[in-house]
Amino acid sequence: MNVATVTLSPHAGAHADAPLHYDAEGVPVGLLDLAPYIGPCRVIHAIDVGPLLHWRHLAHALGDADGPCPPRVLVRSCLCMPQDRFDTGLTAFAPETVERLADLGVLLIGIDSASIDPADSKALPSHQVIRRRGLRVLENLLLDAVPAGDYELIALPLKWVTADASPVRAVLRELS
Picture 1 (tube, rainbow, N blue to C red):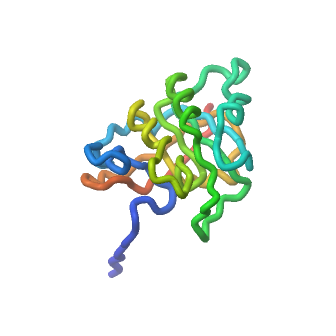
Picture 2: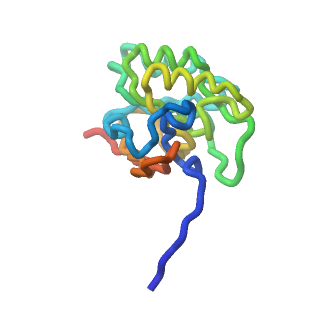
């Protein structure tokens, strides 16, 4: 008989932040509605654009030629995501970019770096936009081999009732 024990931060690997992570009065991950974590999404490549993702880095994939923006947007910001260390130079979202995505009706944003805010940020301005606009977030996604385009996302957080985040097994399925 085998019985494993796992001890980890809920922010390790691909994970979903709950509002409790960036708001002391926020909802924990185990009480979140799962609808934002499953459904149509667009993967956008904005590789090596610098420390902040600005609208100009995403606009090429959100124009009329690409069809209406799905309610979930995942951004591949690096050619090869570092999996053996924390990248202090991670690419993060500029808060105004998160605002523009929310204005388009986006419910969830995701990124292949450890945070939607810069590693040294204390104020977490992009997380505060997420809080204020009611969006959900996925961080630390492994998108190295994923071509840009539209997919179905399935990335359900665990029902950890009091946790501020949860690991996810993020799966992208090609749309038929």
